[in-house]
Image (cartoon, rainbow, N blue to C red; front, side, top):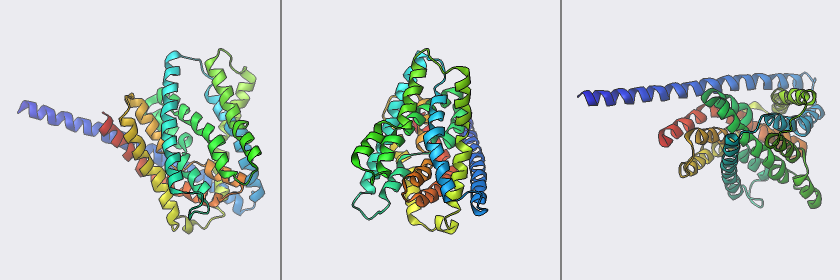
Length: 332
């Protein structure tokens, strides 16, 4: 009887710890979503008051994608090299490539170039790229501390690299082939990743003054991106966001189907539990804000991407905790 009581007590304690962690995740996510939509509301207000017009929103997108986003990458690698961190970085990069590779394959199977989806490139972009920075990093910080933040930065690095290569290639199909190939290899995303890796892998670090300037520019990423997305959202009928069945379909792929496939693959690999959960959180994040920003920059269906970003972000408050709980249950 004592053994049974002990076993039941352990089970209850384990369930209680798991429940507390899930509640903590939900609390962080709800906080981030409220902050996100308040900032988006500022952007929508500015657009409706004509403080920002279509050209202004496009210019904000251009500044973000060409200047601010590269500074985020460079700033994240201004740290001393550690062999253990280097090993973790390599494993994290491989896991990120696996997760995003699965997303690319699934998106190409469903949204075909000659299929029924006229905006197939935007839908592929929404499915492949996640909001792993704004939504993922606060969770990783709360659950796993500096280790989780570092692993999350590895996901962001690969995400940004693919965004500037695969992502831009998808959205700039009307650009001449030679120019598209050149843009794939010579762009702010690739250059900033090379600079960041050089600073991380070598003793060289940016001097204090330029490093401070880069850090200030990187801190503009979230507020300016949200304001730009708010200006895009002000151009949409909000009711249309929740009536568009394709938005629900893309959100389901981004938040449920692909994270489940990714988790199944990760469980087959001999991964550290913290690394597995960190990668899953980043892979289960909602549609990236970059989908709207890059869509506006390259003249594609950015309003669909804006609707998908808004709807998937709301539902992520339920799906991400469920994914983490499942990872805890199955991964030990």
